[in-house]
Image 1: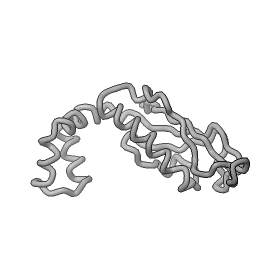
Image 2 (image 1 turned 180 degrees about the vertical axis):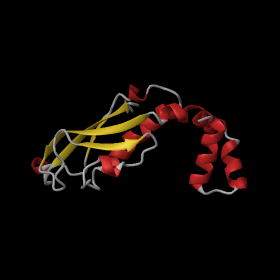
Image 3 (image 1 turned 90 degrees about the vertical axis):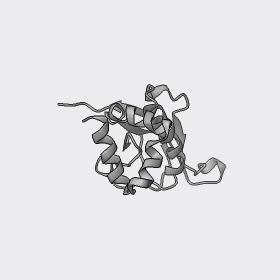
Length: 142
């Protein structure tokens, strides 16, 4: 796929008019995104549970939440239940990886690649706590 085809797909997916989309196309930062998006699409973002204690949603160590390179949860590749209280903090990490990908950098250069749910755990007055570690994994092509 070439850059022009990619831009056409993005325009259609966003559902914007030609006039609205022209405002995006004129931005140098979005030109950089268009230049790097094809390479970025070769990655998945994987949030692996590395600690779990008292999780009401049932997240367990080793479980993986899978996202495409643009931050969409891949529901068929993720657990049936995903805790809503984990997602806000995870969104910050997804954004950091997305920024690296769209700027043509190594997505795994995120130094602080761990986060957890809002629940503080029993010792601090909560129920439990889950910690995940995010990494970008290149999709294997057969």
